[in-house]
Image 1 (cartoon, rainbow, N blue to C red):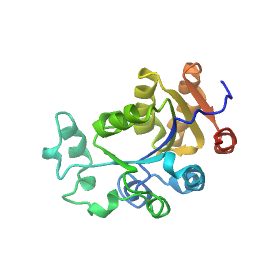
Image 2: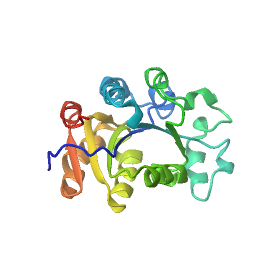
Image 3: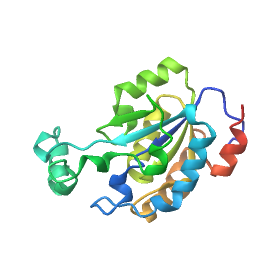
Image 4: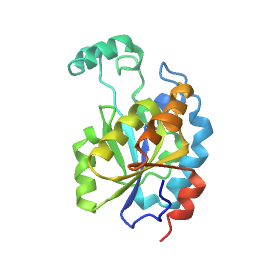
Length: 198
């Protein structure tokens, strides 16, 4: 694992820190409360180098694409037929600092499923991505693999990531990601802040 400082073209990508996961829904991820201070610290340190990713859900299961229909048939309570659209908002502390143009919406696990995100990376010359948010073993890890495949330097903020299943979170941080140590770095929030200087 390298400890080299970050380039000026580093972007902090916050995955799915939304009310949908923070509050009492079928997808409630209680550990969001534990990681929020670290996610907030990273985003406040470099607000102009941070994007806030939101997972969007369909109106109904039948409005979803392909096999996503089956997925939302399993989780009908998180479709907009049953869910208040305000639940897709960022959690309050992050919503307060998300600036214009800093929110990226996706309908897939990976943020790379959003054409707007890819265009942003290409247009800015970004070469390093720091990931925080939820869920470590689903949307975060899917995004990480796409970032690795695209050749980016990838940093996981270990104490700013969580999952609804923390055993799965631990599996990613302790076993799966370290298998790709040449391509994925795992650092604490404190270490990232110390390395991410002007």
